[in-house]
Image 1 (cartoon, rainbow, N blue to C red):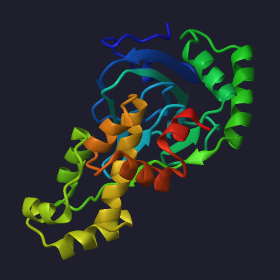
Image 2 (tube, rainbow, N blue to C red):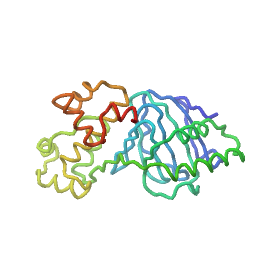
Image 3 (tube, rainbow, N blue to C red):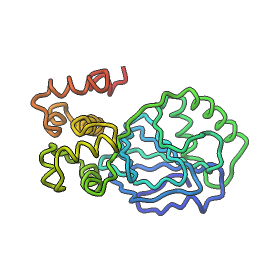
Image 4 (cartoon, rainbow, N blue to C red):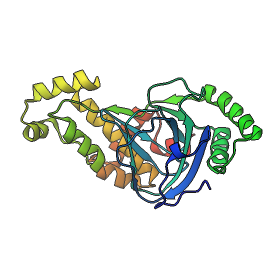
Amino acid sequence: MAYLHSEQPFYPERIDLPIIGLASDLVQHDSGFHQHDEHLQLLYAPSGCMTLITEDTQVILPPSRMLIIPAGIAHRVFFRNVVSYRSIYFKADNKLWDTDVIQVFEVNPLIEQIIERMCYWEWSTYSKEQHALITVFSHELKAAIKEDYHLKIPSDSRLSTLMQQIIIDKKVPPFLKEITQEVGASEKTISRIFKKETGMVYQDWRLQWKFYRSLELLAEEMPISVVADELEFSSDSAFIDFFKKYAGKTPHRYLTRT
């Protein structure tokens, strides 16, 4: 059995196989914070968009990308739109990846088909044919394009709770002046914390958040006008210019991958 219904529990550590794949179609999901000490996890969404957070990082997973979560990293995955959910667990000693950080890769058509195959393997045996397919997957993985959808979250106690809640609630981050009223620290102090802990001044962090949020909304097939309004842009054209600055292409070209 490799298809998981929304209410079914799943414990990969109870399955004695080197690779465990599962597929599901979830309308809404929140995994809560957890970690896999024995497995490295691959997440993939052929449709919809996922958000992963750790104690100090947000990672967006747009459609047609895969996310690699090393063993032992506490994380939370959530989404509020329909997602074709694909997840594969590899034993932590598997040599496919040599990484201790969360990474995002573009998924080409061959990798996509291999992921689909792996996610529907029965949880009973691991055959020579499966091993051969993993070898092909390994070769394709080495050539896969790495992408960056990470956003650091300040760990300073005055800001971490507020920023995590903003990310979870999907609310546009307030202006710097409003944050000072929330946390009781000066603009200079908050700016210093953001620069030190995220590598960005707050205004740049806020714009990066808006770009990643736009990817989620576009993945839900929201009209440009709705995305622009939700992200508080003055016009559709202002949002398109903003998006092109970050993505290097218009929203339409980004979505059609042309």
